[in-house]
Length: 221
Ligand SMILES: *Cc1c(COP(=O)(O)O)cnc(C)c1O
Image (spheres, helix red, strand yellow):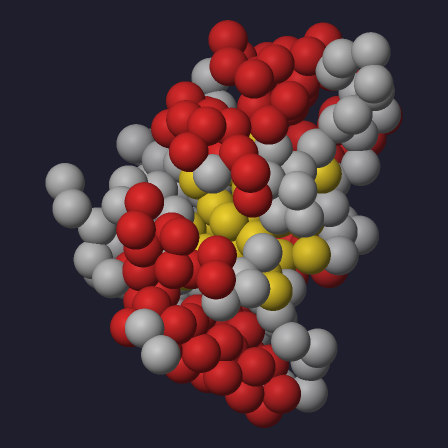
């Protein structure tokens, strides 16, 4: 077995065990392929891994609309990085899921970006659980109003909530907050947990975790 397939198996086994410990259905594994070399991605595709996360629209287009276009069928692509409104149409065309919805201007751009086929990706609202000034995401106190706006004014139903806890802080209080916001606002799914804390996230109710370096190895740059 290749190193990548070993790492994939290790992460999947730990993830499945963590969900099970909490008595929950297994969380989905999103393999974060940003910045990774093509050879590692080719190995990952061989494992049968089907869900991939990307930070940048253009990089994702090059990778999944170009280099690996032959593999695109049957894959689920998720945008997990910030989305500029001028890239909304490209994002709607390429991604199955957009996890970083965080402002009204973007809701407007997404609705406008829907093509003649009517396809709209499934949407997650990013919550800035640490209320960090440099981080995007809706502030926790503003989540109820933002969800109402999304549902009533834009007729968009969020599939879930997503968070990226502050670096160097324990993640579990942030996972707890996100989980409560979802419960209180009738949102069913939770995207939380990365390489360092995906098991904790799964135990706390993540329905998907976003794992990069633990699967692929460290990112260069
Ligand atoms: C890069 C990234 C990840 C993956 O990070 P790792 O620590 O390599 O697992 C997860 N989520 C987001 C939003 C990211 O940007």
